Image (cartoon, rainbow, N blue to C red; front, side, top):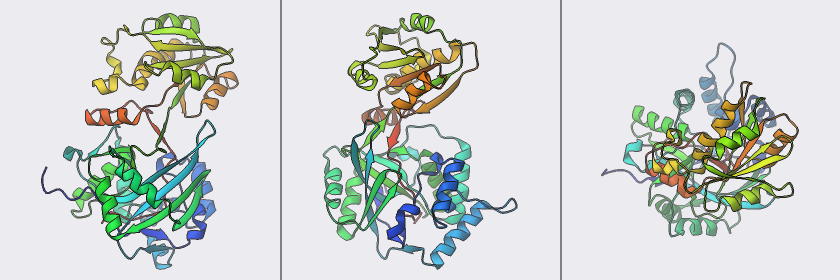
Length: 416
């Protein structure tokens, strides 16, 4: 398509004036906050962003109007202050891995064009649902402000964006904070340097990592309000050393699942082995899955089996694997269809399925909390996310778990 605006642009951000107390003002994305989480965040500070992002009001009140009223009051009181010139905002998040090590992910907040997927400049990989979009659109209509950011990935094949962001992150930051155990630093970049970062970030199509509902909400709002066509986004280079996707392990509850009978079924597709009691399950899984789809299924009684896809596995006849080759080749699609679904339908009791990115939690659920089984798999790779999006397909639910979550409240603004 011709005559499209620049994909990525600097913007005049709106930020908390109390930079020394940012830790009490931040929150994770709205869709990972439980009711108890919200209550804890709200109690931290009367100006915590959760009050606007997930507004509450009396039974007769419009909670979205209440959010707009709060936002206006904070602006009048100087709690939120608009920056004087357009900028991009570089974010570094230092975080712990489940293994105990630490990484730092670096990205930049910018204003991204909110446009139909048909332009192919922003590419999704998830199916969305009407309810969350209606909720976020009502908030956007009331406030006219993005109070939280979506999360996008830039291909960055020459690592130019990653290198430029890393250079900014060597300077003294403009603000610091913490969200949980994630240590946060923020830098403001203006002028020609901001334009250059925006250009590097927008050279190629961007891929949604998290925030599909909010992106589609922004695009819907842009159709209603021509000119209000930007969405606040954190853009991270796909080559950033801190970019991390964790696997989402499946934990199945429900009695009556016979491991021996399940193993017989699984031999149709997998080479089946036992995992030594002393073996590190995550390390063993990485070894088994280096060249083939693999998973480990933990059963009660420390009976753990490894499943490694056979080269001659009859996958062509399995309709549940997905439509496109990009999806059908995913570990998560194969394991969901061939392993998890067999577990769910094998027992006498109605099953329930729980997800966790923590291997310790998965194993503890089986060893000590009565779960029937836990399924461990390797993480989805960034290039696989790109391939599915490029194919115009969607991944199975819970295919990716990007960490850490993008903090809400550091920077507010686009719609433009």
